[in-house]
Amino acid sequence: MSTTPKIVPQPVIVGFFLLGLLSSVAFRAILFLQKYNPAWVRPVWYFGVIGYMLFFIYRYYISQRRKRAIAQSSIIEKIRDGVTLTATPRFIS
Image (cartoon, helix red, strand yellow):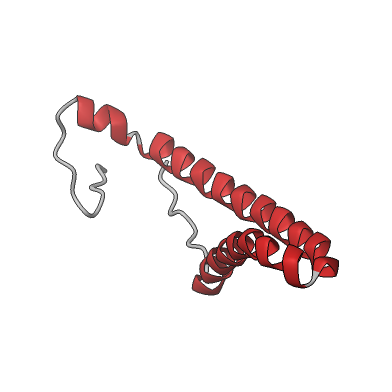
């Protein structure tokens, strides 16, 4: 049984990329905020932590989808058996 994997929409991919990037910048900004505006340290730290958590939960979800796609397609067994892989699957009727 072969199922076509669902593709994540481009805005979702870009959104999580930006979330991870902004979370990374937030942690670096804490160094400057400690000196110039200490009241912002805690909110920026929370944004960084929560942003990283969401980003890595998303990455875990993507990894699980890839793992499931590999298992469903039996690609590892096909490679071990020396089957030539093609871009489109061939179905035997």
